[in-house]
Length: 459
Image (cartoon, rainbow, N blue to C red; front, side, top):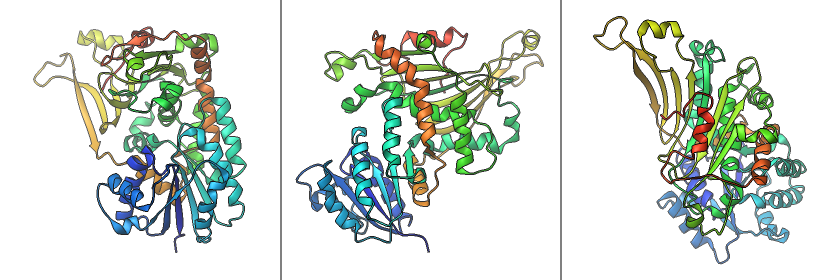
C-alpha cells in the first residue's frame, strides 16, 4: 500500500500558490494522483482570512467549484514568529502516520526563519518529511552557503527538493531524450562539429508587479544563475552511467566544475547588461542600476567542449517572448562552398521551450528542379507537442521521491560561483546601458557575440 502524505503550503495566499500550486493540485486530484493525500494545509499571514475567504481563493484559482477537492484543505494563519506555529503543530499531531511535504512558496527572505522553526518542532514528530524550496536559493554565493547550512541542521539532503520549474518543462527534458536516445547525435555532439550554443529567455513584458523582489535581484540572478545554467548542464553533460538520479546529477555537477572561471577584471569581456528605457518610470524608482537584460559567455574546459562558447541571455520588454536553446553547427568546409558558389547556412538544432514546446532541425537541401550544383536552400523539420504544466511533473516527482529534476546542494553553490565575479563587478561599476522597449536588447549584447564573428539566433 502506498504511503499516505500531507502537504503544508507556506505562502498559501500568495501569487505562486494561487496561479500555479492550487491549479496543479486540482489537476492531480482529478487524475486520482492525490488519492493518498490526507490533508492539504495552507498557511498565510494575512489577517481576517477565514475558511470562507480561503475557499473563494481556491475557487478563483481553479476556475470552478469542487467541494470534494476543497474538503482536503485547511487554512492556518501563520506569521513568522515562533509561537504562530502552535496551531500548525496541533493539526499535524493528528497525522502521525503520514509523510509530511512542506512547500515554501514564500518570499526568499522568509526561508531561513521557516526552516528553523519547522526544524525545532519537527524534532517531536516521528514522521518522514520532505521540504520543497523555490528559487532563488540565496542571492549570492555567501547567502546560498548560509541557507544550505541552515537547512542541513534540520533536514537531510535526501529530504530536500530545491525546485527549478524549467527542469519540469517538456522540451528541456527532451534535450536529455534527444541526446541519449538517438545514436546519430552522439557522434556530432562535441567541439568537432558544434560551433557554439545559445540559450535565450526573452520576454516582451516588464516586471509585472514584482518590483520589490526584482529590483533587488535583476536578470542575472533571476534567470541565468538558475534556469539557463541548468539548461546548459543538460546540453553539455556526459552520458550518465545509468538512468539514476545520483548519476544524472553527478554529471551535471561535473559540467559546472568544468566551466572556466571568469576573473573579476575579465567581466566586461564575458558579460553585459542593460536596463529598458522606461524601467525607472514604470516602477516609480528614483534611481536603480538593476539590470533587466543580461548576457554571458561561458566556456566549458573539457575534451568534449574545449573552445566552444555557450552564450546565455535573458531580458525584459524585448520584441517578443520566447525561450529556447540553439545548437549551431560548424559551417561547411570552404572547398564545398566554392564548388556550390555560395555559402550554405549552418545546420542548427533548436529546442523551443516557450511559448511552444517544439524541437526544430534546420538543414540545407538542393531546390526542387534545380541543378546538381544549385545553391541549397534552408529546410526545416519540426516536432511539437502539448506544453504540459512543469509544476505538475515536479509535484509528482516530489510525491514519489524522485530527485532527478531537483537541484543538489553542490549544484547550487557551483552555479553561484560561476556568476559571483559578475555580481561583484557590476556592483562596483554601476554604469548601465539603456535599451529601447520592444527592441532586441542593448547594443552591447550584439557586440558581445559579433566580436566572435557570430550573431544571435531566433527561432
